Length: 245
Image 1 (cartoon, rainbow, N blue to C red):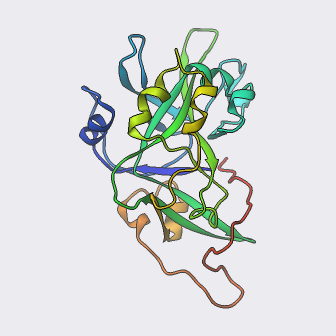
Image 2: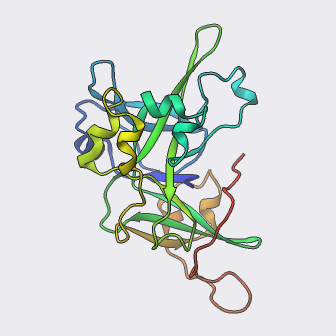
């Protein structure tokens, strides 16, 4: 799964990657968390690529009371087209989410170790995402979104069995084309990403607190490897998704 991520590059880097002419300035964000506004890239009515801010935690359009609905942070790419919560977005509102990396937690019993997972060569990657717009009876709207996930590749599966779907730049157009590309046509874009693309860096407990959002939370730490305590991941582990609410 993906329950926290970061976007460290500036608006020019994002604009260059996605071919956007106008994008508002924004600061680096080191610890983006659920319910916060996140930047998504999609197409407008004229099929032009455009940025949009949405709340992280998808609320399907058919929900009657958003306050009583559990926000959906992630969607399993393998089954999203079949699920009522994601079916409409998979067909009509596929998005791209710029990210510098994400955080994942390896768990052993009651202990957990956070990792900062980023491209080895730096830069921005694009998660596959979904967006929905919910309208209230009085006409107000809430735009919300989630991150698609897939099975973790071999190099990351020892930390967690899921990872975000990552879309290559040459496939942006296909991914965003919801007019001619049905969900079945883009299944090949939702596979585990290349083994050597990402690196996982163990980091301290400061990242666990949402209010901590500075470069220090990404500082590498040493992992306990002795005794009966937490050890460095070696074999794949199956863990439940974090409950962040």
